[in-house]
Image (cartoon, rainbow, N blue to C red; front, side, top):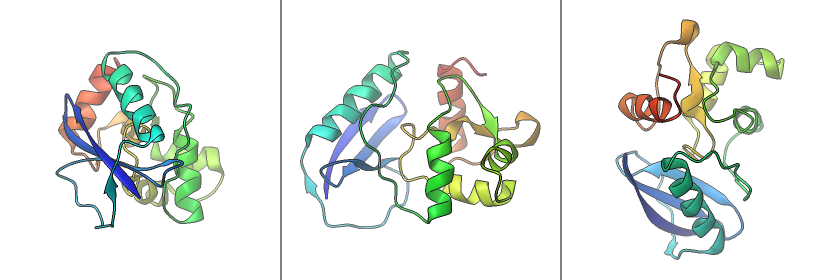
Length: 153
C-alpha cells in the first residue's frame, strides 16, 4: 500500500493506492482504518492529485485511472453507479436504488456512507429525498462546498 497527502481548498486529504489503483481518498479529519503503508507518490496517486487539481480549478475532467474501493459486492455496485454521475449532476438515494433495480434507498445510503474514495467517486452528488443535503463522510459543510463549486447550489 502507498499513500500521499493532497492539500485541497477544503482541507488536507490522504490518498491511498495498492500501486495499480486508487483505494482511498478522504479528508484528514475522517476516521480511517490503520494500514501499513509507505509514503510514495506512485504513478496512480500522481494522476489522482492532478485530477483533483483540475477539479478544484473548475475543470470537468473524467477519471481515467483505476479506482478500487473496498466493500461488499452491493457497495461496489452502488459506488460504480455513482461514477456515472457527471460534474454538476445530482441524484437521490432512491433514484440510485431504482436505477440498480435492487436494494432500498436506505441500503444505498449505507453503501454511499462507506465510500472510501471521496470526490473521485462522487458520493457528494447524492441527495436525500426532495433534494435535501444529507450526510457526507467529509462533513456537510464540505458536501455543500463541493456542490456549490459544481454549480448545483
